[in-house]
Image (cartoon, rainbow, N blue to C red; front, side, top):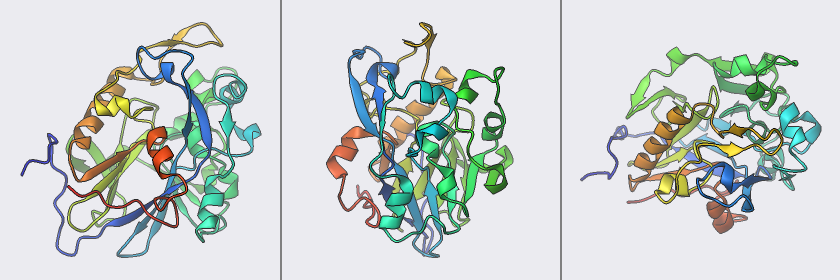
Length: 307
């Protein structure tokens, strides 16, 4: 039977390991729709969640966090992000990722492994709240972490600089040595239950997560900032190529490499046609509205998708 997708995912093995995936509250940010969706009105200022996730290997009990959403202490935000808090990107953070984890019984003081999808402020959260954690990033993030000062590129000034290097592990390109469809992937637990997916185009080092959610072929794809609205992977909207930055008056894109980002979006949309794959964006306001305060949030879990 065809999956509806143009490529196949790895078939389950005997006694296949899989993961329990839970959403974490990570605050909310205004993301004006016209920055991301072609033809949207510039008055459409949607408030979106910044979702984080808790992932547990159901066989071994190993745990990992994917992203941290927003941090409550906005003084730690990168330079350009702080400048936009009162205008373009106001934030509301009644509960951050540490609050969400501790609500489910996981201490922020524990030796967590935390995968950072990329260095934008609404995904890095406040690393200082996790003093014993190891932060896992793609190698390309390292160049942005070290770029400070007046001569630093704009993408570095909008990237968080507060991830501690002495607690960081950078994955080189060579580690992404498992080919799944069009993607280069890293087998995180070494048992085929969860992969970190190289997801280029949005920002250097941008990664997604592909995790099995059952032993018989269900998956979840945590797409981070691959797209900022569901319509862009659901076939009912086009990516905005350029918008006018109200601070500079110049045209810019939400992605550093738009053609590559568009290719990745197309691949995610293709994957979404597989009836046993659930694709979830970090800022999916529609999913959040339907599921907030419900069993998909930690200590509950997102159910496996069935065909």
